[in-house]
Image 1 (tube, rainbow, N blue to C red):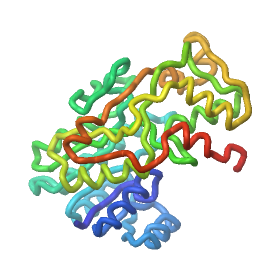
Image 2: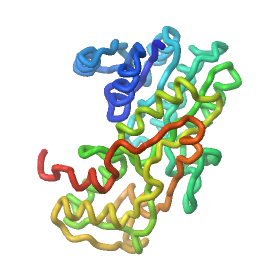
Image 3: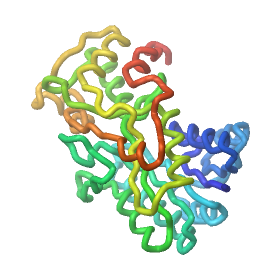
Length: 297
């Protein structure tokens, strides 16, 4: 297949590109810079210049492909609502180029806000959009199904390797700044996780075999307690590990406080059953945190 990938030089997207190339697909990757284009070319993929706000570049890239994988997102939480709106327009543009063709569109979302407090499954619908939770990636993808697009969603937990770990990366930054590695309350609230090299094959499977309207969970570990994550960060930075009360959380974590106290485990049992995906090849989150080089800039 000729596959158009957004975020092709990114943390998740670059792993997806390599997975597709290894499987024999031809990859066209959306890139914003000469450096990213050069890196993509060296990997064996074709560069397509543009960005998430250049809707014409998105439409032309999708129109020339047999399928699209959308991994790009602007991770600036100071402008989260605006970036969610950019994401929705990008998905609409990609989908419009595939309308009526039954070509696959695989869109990225997250497991975190599906059903806090209980294990989220693939059959759970996305959280309704609101000012507090403005991301509508899933709803926008689902709207494409009625237009003849084989749209599906991959929900990501904390995606990690020994360099980056999703929201845990921000926990590390706070710990470095404050001189303590903290968790909220008893720290037993859970975050699911997956290694990025385990997540990448799921995107390929969703592209090749995914069903229209389906939701898939790229979850290897259903829930790692925040207390264990904080302890690993403390070991790595050689700083104390402390508990913060819910009342202290906002002052300590800032915008991250909302997530730091969230219990959001998730299962991938249905994904493994439906697509045959097995996230068993890579280290777990704590193992990667223990392998981080915390004092290298």
